[in-house]
Length: 98
Image (tube, rainbow, N blue to C red):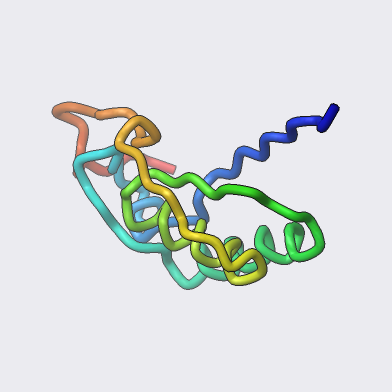
């Protein structure tokens, strides 16, 4: 019997995160420079782990993170709306104090 391992990763820092902005599913910002470095570090943790599938939210920050992990896997990244973040409603695009 083969064991099933599921790995759940959070996307790297997005531009919205770096600006202390509520983004959620309404605001699709890419990874910041810091976020790209974070995603690269996550990817390195998986370079010697065989993955069968990679799933991602279609949001750019999540997809960019999945693609960096995929650099070691060479799979098709499968996106699903079911993996999108929460909707912050009226708070989307607003800034919070850090």
